[in-house]
Image (cartoon, rainbow, N blue to C red; front, top):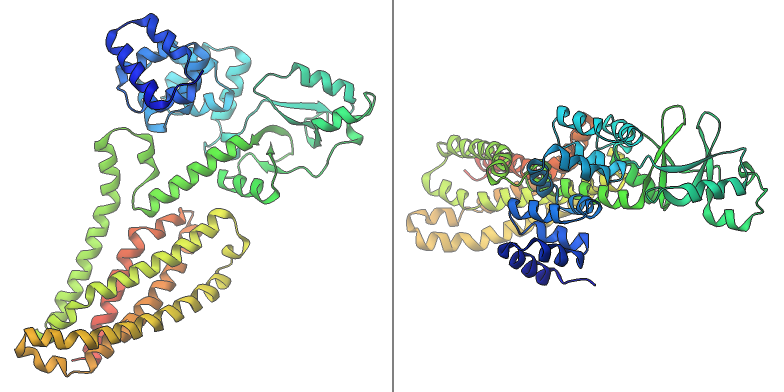
Length: 462
């Protein structure tokens, strides 16, 4: 029996308010872990603790894994070492490692010391890898069978496998555990029991190195359209596997990180429930952008002395239009480039190829926007001079629309170049290219666009 989320929330809060532990246990027994995890985001820490203690250890472990990262951090902080050890012991090694990575090293060591040696060793090995590498996200529990064994032997290995082990296929290894290939389960059924595994294994296995970035792993699994990829070390020894559920988690995480960075914040915001820490993270990105806008203001302030007051006011009317169009155009270009990086498209890794395509697009857009800007200014100037008679001469100055049109053209071209160059530059420096699709590219384009506009105005419109 399953309960709708809202109904479950109402029942759980009513029982918690009533303080009836027996009724709480009964209510929770009819709910799935995923539904309970959703409700966790709506209740306070004290209520979460009561629910966790009322759940069987295995279900409590599932709930902790399923909640959002920020909520999980709050839960972990509230639990004592004994409770954490009990929950971690119920988790698969990869999920256990993810959970323990959020704790201080001394507490992690204490928890591992209270666990069974075999499980503790597996989790310890996973914690040795960066959490954003193939080794950090892999499942170490795999069915690995020596190549000299037969189909009958492999069936016995499968029977002895734990529930956490991936059984879409079995891995065939040599005596040094170097990966030789895979055998799908279906092939075990369709071949005689005496068949040697080495003779029926697929030797063209999809593999990734333990130190490969998780984004690379996602791209490889998508490219070859497989359910999983074997994780090996630099000697080709089998360490574990990255399965489709790991793939979904990583894809979601990478997409969230890119969106956060493109919005001008940081993925670290995902890990906290504190509004003050979230505000600090956003301000870290926002305040430098404000300083960038001060540079734009400085450009205008320096330019003001070069023009008649009426002409400068008329020029200032079009500053937001040129700045905004340059920023928006740059974001369009950089978003396309960053998306190509994320999906692993080969064409996106070639700078000159991207420059040729996006450069042509920017050229077409710049001419169209420049003509539109020229027409718009030509129509708007008479309205301005009608309200400001002393500036009537500005309305007859055909050079002002020309300056705006040319400035718009050059601003779009420059924005297109920055939209291409910044992601490639950040990628070469080892910085997430998604940063180039956020406020950074907008602020940079604002400064450049206004500088171009005022320089052209001094040459043409004055």
